[in-house]
Length: 402
Image (cartoon, rainbow, N blue to C red; front, side):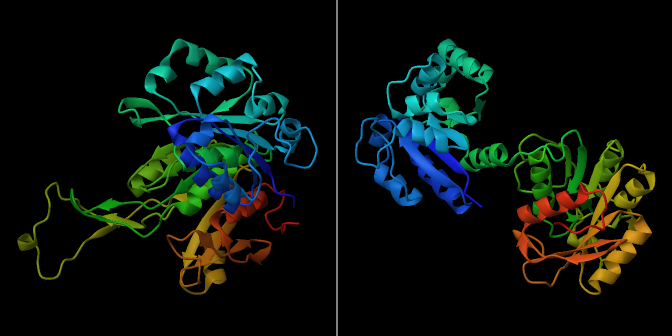
């Protein structure tokens, strides 16, 4: 398929150097990047840097004749699937809002018909000035998307809002704007993700190695497909996906309670690694070694089965998807889970399969349904999330993707 094209505008702020990392990351994701720089931006980062990264000539001068003939600001705008400005100074935001076209970037913006994303970066006082707030409001009303700046120590020495948003957050918003669809529009998708923690005392707990990456990939993909996404998540180091309502929980009991509060779903995806048992009693004080026997024995009590309870309560038009991590007899055990818990689909993977264990960015699974099984090849968790969601949205869970 043709690569999606991003026109990346870079303006004259200290955060301009971060545009190189953003361009590099987007290239690795398979996007085509064309860069337009303001004259002031070239004082902070050279066009050559971005040309080497993107393999495309950087546009600075509207009247540069060193290219195949066309009206360059119009031709670049026509190529764009998304127009992005990172960083965006108060000056460029003001020009965009006023419709001023006095350089390559501003004329390209006016010629652009694709969605626009702006990432402001400036001094706190400039960001909070009534004129800047008015200009941002004008652009928002025009349909321009903004990713809010973060707060922290600024280059000028001040502390406050105005720092460029994290590059990873900008990337995620770009992915959303370029890949959003309506396949799950109007649907509510509830997803559990990550590990649960079962306390022994105020210091120690029982848990597992789940990173939450699969559940978060599903939440991100479902949001991109237009769904209203509820993410019930155990402790992870992952950032919440864009436009996803996240409910942080700790124990299996917490996750169960939260899940029972969201039974008005269209699709429920149980991707969390939930503890089957919890300690029967929890000490209010830290257990000291001298208080313990040489051999510590812990009495355990079984936790509520979240996915089974959800599946039992489901209505005819609701679907429940479970995940199963196995170490042997993958398909057989997954089929038993499918039948016993009355779910519609089990996504099963083998802990010992290369690329399919905890913590990684890839997965290799078998989709198990009452109508048959489909073994999928090794792929990224983001790719797998889309495959599962497309299967989930089909009329029959036994159908294979076409």
